[in-house]
Amino acid sequence: MKRLFLTTSLCLTAAASFADTRADVLTTYADIAAATYGDSLATAQTLKAAVDALIAEPSETNLNAARTAWLAARVPYQQSEVFRFGNPIVDDWEGRLNAWPLDEGLIDYVDTTYGGATDENAAAALNVIANPVFTLSGTEVDATEITPALLSDTLQEADGVEANVATGYHAIEFLLWGQDLNGNGPGAGNRPWTDYATGDACTGGNCDRRGDYLKAATDLLVSDLEWMTSQWADDGAGRAHVMADENAGISAMLTGMGSLSYGEQAGERMRLGLMLNDPEEEHDCFSDNTHNSHYYDGLGIQNVYLGSYTRVDGTTVSGASLSDLVADQDTALDTEMRLKLAATMRELGEIKAAAESGFAYDQMLEAGNAGGEDLVMGGVNALIDQTRSIERVVTILGVDEIAFEGSDSLDNPGAVFE
View 1 (tube, rainbow, N blue to C red):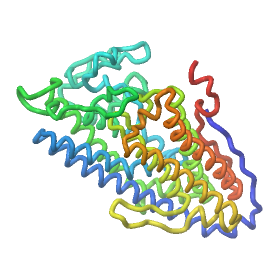
View 2 (cartoon, rainbow, N blue to C red):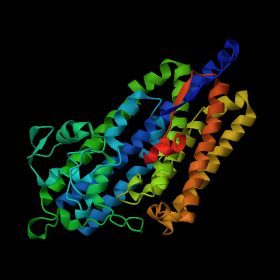
View 3 (cartoon, rainbow, N blue to C red):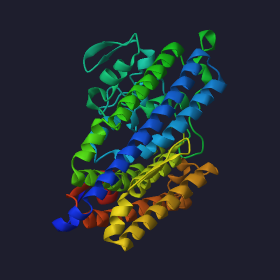
View 4 (cartoon, helix red, strand yellow):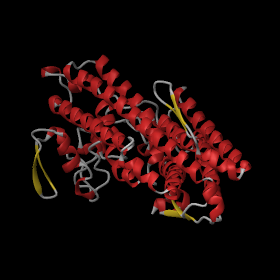
């Protein structure tokens, strides 16, 4: 579902007066995209090294190192999500890396309470790791060798089911943590390191194939990020697309901000889980890292408006910004937008701080947990509120009409329970 926001047009002389500034803003935007994806690639390469070490020498220490590397890799990647929606080259690709939620039984063993195949998903409990040969969509598949191509070309969204997520961060997350069986209680997944052990020490069965799957998924993550990083280089297609038309480029920036802020984050990632009181609706549900995912999504939106991104090495990429454009037209609106972004970051920061102090996001979603509901809804309401200001920015900058992503949880709550 989409919410449609129509803009008003500025006179041609006003638009022309800051045309060069808009080009500068788009250059900053592309530079931040390049840096953000570059950091995502670098941290994914560190994750790959940790995964390779775990497979070569399984141990609790090496499993924990791989988990730590995964958590670090999420920090820049989540900040990149603001480049979705307005940029088809990103949105068409993003599902390979960040699709969720997933039917983890497609990949590996699951608890008996998980259940089996359903009418909606015949492959929900396929367990590719345990089955070197299986039937999918009526065709026998030889999965003796688990490769990146098998994951991306055969298993990802198998049978056209979005929950068949075989690639990306969340498939890797599941393989590192295992299922989180704590419900609305504290605690993440607790996969033992012996799930990657050799010989009699192997638990869960098929430890060699589990290692093969983890390696294939991590290698694919790195190669996908290599490709996207190249799209924002000086001669990249992503950069060329936003620079080709200044009006369309600014529209893409605002579309990404508004859609992530409203429908995706406030709606699908936060309000929906609270309505359903379902920890399975957590974004990083196996690792209990959802509080960080929400925080860094919000930070990515702020980065784009302010034209500044702090890299993982502490250096900053910055330049002409949307804030500059808005301030040229309406200083009060720019102040409003900055204050709304800061308010959102405070609310998301409170969720993050509470989770890091022992109040897990799972617990916040529990029915009747008033404190948890207040925290989550504080973030939801701030994100909705800042979207209202983004609408006003769209109007003052006079770009083409924009359709922000919506969510039934916000636009039609009754449909959530149908």
